[in-house]
Amino acid sequence: MAQQLSTTPATAIDGDDSLLIAGRRLRSRLLLGSGGFPSLELLADAIAASGSELVTVALRRIDPQARGSLIDVLAEAGVELLPNTAGCRTARDAILTARLAREAFATDWVKLEVIGDEDTLLPDTGELLQAAEALVAEGFVVLPYTTDDPVLARRLVDVGCAAVMPLGSPIGSGMGIRNPYNIALIRDAVSVPVVLDAGVGTASDAALAMELGCDAVMAASAIARAQDPVRMAHAMRAAVEGGRLARTAGRIPRRSYAVASTSEQGLAEFG
Amino acid sequence: MILLNGGASDLRAGVTVAVALAQLGVELDARGVAVAVDGEVVPRAGWESFTLAEDARVEVLTAMQGG
Image (cartoon, rainbow over all chains, first blue to last red; front, side):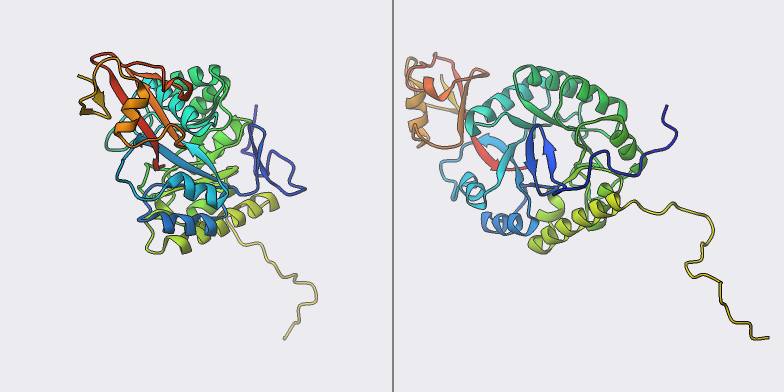
């Protein structure tokens, strides 16, 4: 029975400290969403500034009039694409969307999203678990967007998910991590990578996620809708790196009273 | 009537998925495209042989910015 939340990383920190998800090694711990960028050129610049190696894409009806190819932009940037099931409301739709993504992009990876509420875009956890189990059985590498519930996170790992992606707060809300304690509990509850998803508003949110023990952070709106998306992509990159360094450095405990940082030995007495 | 990406089409029953794709200007070697007919994936290898029923619902999807 654990008595304290862990404050140090579960994994060794020597070497290049890269992130391992389902056997794939990622040097960047920042995942980028491709949604919301005003242009593909700006997306390309933000990808470069973020250092991210994994970028999400959605699957939508083809538009014969569309200009520019998202796939070409991502290929040119040298990143892997991570298809999502954004917009799906049922396990059935999410499963079919994942199968179509596998067909379209020749990847077994899927960021599984099953939305249960229109206003908060919170996950439908029952449908999510059902879809996750079915997709794992079909050989998918499943990264589920989930609530900040440690028990559900464990259930998702039990059915074979390769990582869990708990929300900090609702998608696009920019409200940061509303329940840091739960995120830390999730980190301790599962052995797969924890990727903080949704709610990140600014760099300090990303740093906090890493300090809480998350293995990576996913940012989308926070970068795409910033006044200067490329600058914010750079800020997120630095924050994720800083938070990871702080986590692995081992922070000092919080105390209610001061602890002098200067010794009193040799202190002059002025009568 | 065959529905192509949610819209009415003048496709006749018996045409292949490849014909439906041509209506959208999608080539058979297009990258990043997937097709579902009536809620089932039609793999690329079957695009030229899979024929559409009179009331088929065809979805032709590709990567869009998201997430």
